[in-house]
Length: 222
Image 1 (cartoon, rainbow, N blue to C red):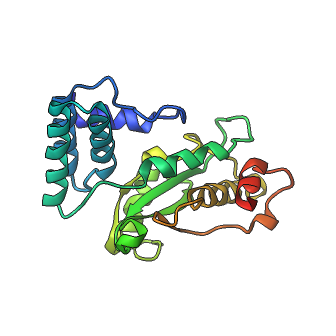
Image 2: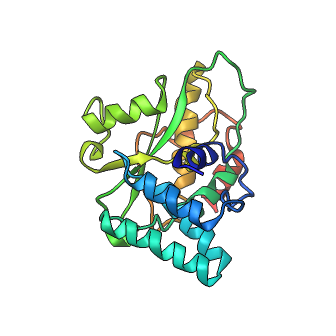
């Protein structure tokens, strides 16, 4: 089981009721894939974190030892697990994709993991954006300084596929792409005083279309 295989699992992990995407994977495979991911040009902290969570959930001495190996790999890279990854993903349950998918939709939402925040914010933060390019192309632009979000050329780490709701393209007509981007941004800020800090452009909720994301708005209002 290679990094590419498990990376595809994460990219297609759309069931919000499933918090263990690697439940079927054996411990040695998780360790090897995490190691391969951390050696890439953009180290894959997302996969490593999910592997650690899966192994620690199992609780056996072998699994705990394997999780410790991945933690050590992260430390060697100057990183650590993403402490808030699952709690942030849970917030996606308050979002609703309110348009029937169409091949004509051109815009994608994306989430970038970035470094540079204090430990009080869980060290890592996220940048939410939308693009007509592939998310990989837009990520490379941010990293190389082309129309880049603040701090991303220096602190950008990787795309976070597990938070890229709704896992499909969104409509652009009537600025709906910007409203979906804002909804994702707002959802990821819910109940996250210990991280992540969320950056990116947003449209004020008062400007959202009537009836758009009512569940999320109710949650924000408390």
